[in-house]
Length: 423
Image (cartoon, rainbow, N blue to C red; front, side, top):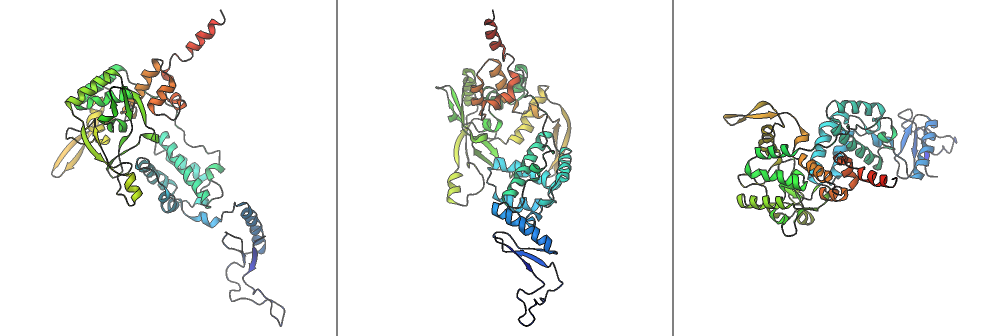
C-alpha cells in the first residue's frame, strides 16, 4: 500500500564504512518523522514514530475509500472560505443572490466567520444559534441556518471537512419558526385599502386579489398578458430590482409560469384602467441587469419591451420599496389596518423633509392579497389542485400546508357521505 515514514534527522542510506546512518543537517530541528507517498494527500510530520505510524494507517484506509481529508485544509476561516471559495462559485439569479448575500454578510459571517472550519463544533453552533435568535426572527434565522448548512456541505465536498458539524451534532436543531396561519383580509378591508390608494394604483389591489399574484408579478404584468377572449391571464414574469437599484424582468418565483382564470369583473376593471391609464412601454434586461460579458450572457440578458399595466404617475416602472412606503402603507393607515408611529427627517440639499414612520406589519403587505385569493377559492370549495396551479406552488401539499385553515368544510362532505352508509 502506498505511503511510508521518513526519518528527517537521519540520512536514508547507512555509511559504507560504519554501516550506520549519519545525522542530517536538520538533526534536532522540527518534527522528526514525515509521512510521505500517499497519492492525493499532503505530507505530514510528527514528533514520534508511533504518531506517524498511526496517522499513516488511518490515511491509507481513508485514501483507499476516498474519504481522506487533510485537517490542514480545514484551517481556513469560515469567512474566508465563503468569500474566496464558496460565494464566487455561486450562479444564483440576482433575485436570489441579493437577499442571500445580505443574510450571510450581515449575520452569518459576523457571528461565526472568525472560526476555522475545523473548529466549528457543537459549542460554536449552540452559541451561533443563540446569538442569531437575538438578532432576527425565527423565520429569518431558519433561512440563515440553511445557508450555513449548504456552506458546510460544500466544505465537505471540497475536502476541507470530513463531515459537516451540523450533521455530526444532531442534538442542535436548526431554528424553526412557530407555525403561523396565513392571514386573509375581509372584503371590507380590501375595499377600504383600495379606496385609500391613488386611482391609478387601485387596479393593483384587484390584480392581487383576483389573480393571487405576488407583488413582483403584478408589477410585471403587461397588456399582452390579458387574453380577454379566452378569459385567462398569463403570469409569465416578474419585475425585480437588484441590490444596486437596477430593475429587470425575470421568471416568476420557482421559474414557474402559469395561467390564471380572468374573472369577468376583473376584465371589466382592467379595460377601464387601460382607458384611464394607458399601459406604458418599458424596456428592461431579462434575468440579470449586469452588463453581459459573453455571447451567451448577451443572449440570456437580451432586453425585452413590454407595455406595463402598472406604472407611476411619471410613466415609469414601479419600485416596490418606494411604492410600499408612499402608497401602500398610507392606504393601510387610512383603512385603519396600520398605525403611523412617528416621523423621520431626511435632508435634500438645503431642504429637510419629514417622512412618516409606520409600525411593522409584514402580514398586511401586498402578499396578503394572495392569501385572500386562496381563502376565497378554498372556502368556495374550489379544487386544491386548481388553486395550487393558479398560485404557482410546486405541489398541492404546499398549498395545503399554507391554507388548510381556509377550508372550514374540509372533511364534512366525506363524513356526510359515509354517514349514509350507516343508515
